[in-house]
Amino acid sequence: MPYTKSDVSLYYEIAGTGRPVVLIHGWPLSSRMWEYQVPDLVAAGYSCITYDRRGFGDSNRPWDGYDYDTLTADLDNLLTELDLHDVALIGFSMGGGEVARYLGTRGSNRVSRAVLMSSVTPYLYHSTENPAGVPAEVLEGFGAAMLHDRIGFLKAFGKGFFGLPDGGSPDKAGGPRDIPSDALMEYFLQIEAFASPSATRDCAASFGSTDFTADLGQITVPTMILHGSADQTVPFEATGKRAAELIPGGRLEIIEGGPHGIWYTHRQRVNELMIDFLAS
Image (cartoon, rainbow, N blue to C red; front, side, top):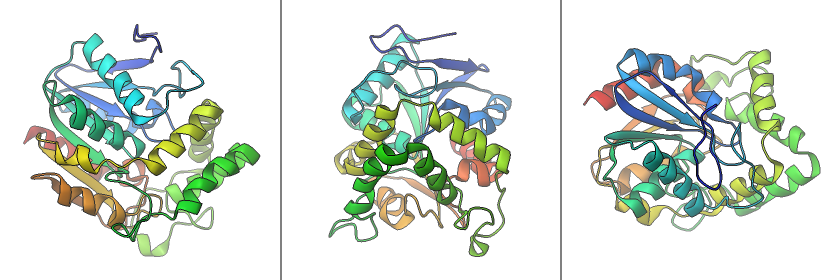
């Protein structure tokens, strides 16, 4: 299996040929989440590079290093080792923070496009400037809940992730969508369960407390902000809407009725928008 040769080895896969697209997964999943995007991107003529963040999937599981500066250094190591240029970076949820921090601190010599999907940028927490943000006590409660019953917390978290507030039926106000089956929900839970417990807790602390405002202001490549209007996990008003205002020339695409997990629930539309943007 292919791994980077840095101190913390990251597992990665490459599919297809053409201009490289690097897909950065969300929390608390792994690169396996992208199986609903890779075939369409490869068919459109792109080379897809997916990798597991440290502590997740098949990558190494160090005890620490889950702050965004370190995670961005891991991304840089991957791009450098594979000698990738003219790259499109696509980051989902927590992964959007890595895209923003990379472009904000390391520039765009290797990068030509960026997509922030359901992203935590510019920041997730509630503040005077961000009244639609998530209250601090909710974000801080993630760590305590996982120390008490990590698997139970993740199972409950997944329901809201896909807009399933009652655990089975979609929110009727959310509009048409693909609903993950019970088997698929169990599969996602297994991916989450076998991640490093410390990585899962520390990454939650990082995406809940990091401010990417300065990074977004440094982005100079064409960027698409893709967000569901009914996202209850990373509220659109607190993140996607504000990110589009902060990124010069940012292209905002709203998935009406979309929950957080639009990469699955609205995958056909999401894939169409990404392929159209990458070709522009």
